[in-house]
Image (tube, rainbow, N blue to C red; front, side):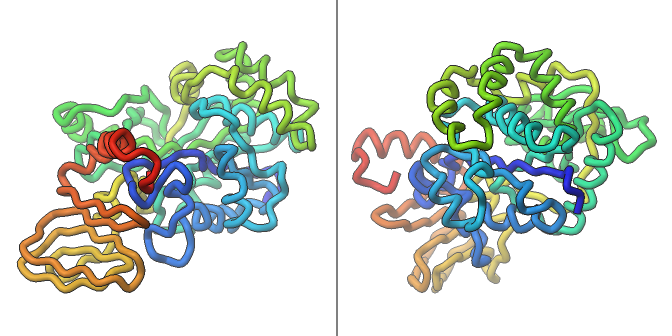
Length: 360
């Protein structure tokens, strides 16, 4: 392993589209949604441990989830868990992590990866990341991994790249926002578009200088706490100052302003596991096209259902087709799969009507 290789796991989201399993108090990255025996966060950490020294892996998370991270990844030093006292999107926490790493190793190369994505080939993932790390170590550039689209999906951002490049990494022309259906079809027809997986690689010097140039106010704010980072006084500094940072994503803050960005088409299977529907797509189906996790199922004239129940509970279905059926604590959710994007609005309505007495 290379001691100058570092990784940062983004683990601060709520994953509200996986309600009622994923909640504000216990979000999806801490759940074993795939029923493998380990949570999504644990799977991500184990994957990175195969080629990144354990002491060089940091977890960025909400301050409320620090104890959950310690519980699921025992043995981490306190400085490896970066608590966000306020929700400020991805740019502030990435800058903070970069400065913490720079203080440890000024020549570091840094990977940023989500905590809750599904990757089906750890070896291919490692090979792709190491290619990006080698490129970033030699060049003053930002690298990202892109996923080859298999359908004109509208739930992902897209990366437009220069298809005439002959090297494994292609120069990025532009990051595109989530498109409508017709635009997504045009992207696929054009052939030089990839899904943006939110996986980035850069040298510490490259990303710190990018923030210094493009986000000077944010840079000055976090640089003022340099002496506190990786010490007992770090939390005190963050509690006093983190909330003053602009609420902005790294895409808007840095990527759209950078002139030297390269993308490597990923060689592994990938899913962002953003919804119950995406989990349905990834799991093995029975003869009727139903997916059951935790539950035993007796079904007749019922197909295409995503069923997630407490271990050993029996679901009996008659004439139920293409539904999401979830039970967690004091909540049962039944909703057509085609309406899964409405779950966030449903959670808001449930809170308004029933308060915090429900699993929300």
